[in-house]
Length: 115
Image 1 (cartoon, rainbow, N blue to C red):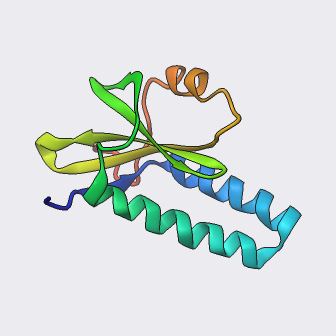
Image 2 (image 1 turned 30 degrees about the vertical axis):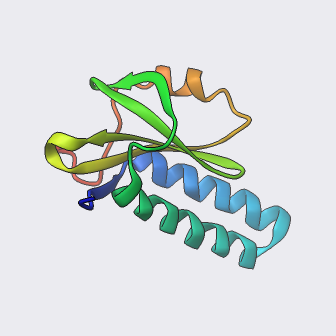
Image 3 (image 1 turned 90 degrees about the vertical axis):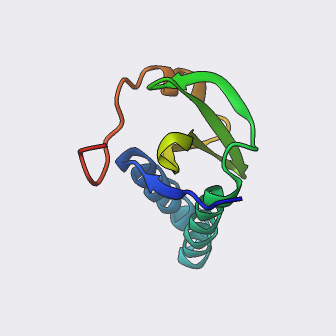
């Protein structure tokens, strides 16, 4: 299987930062650093595996939103086969009302605003 480029939205970056800050506060900096290293590796794996994890009933810009479990979080992304990319939209704690959060976003922001 061909590897796809993995692109992060600003929202997903902020989500990871927020979760890491929570982990650092309650469990220490070493655990927070490990979380960030592990989640980055899992997001990079989406380039190979994207699309084989759980598809939600939600769409973003006509693409099905997929979710990948990364306890205690969920990584939400879309597979854009036509341009060979995976866009990580959000990283949310599993207990949050993620359906409502994802449905309320009309447009995600990117490092390169042309996307």
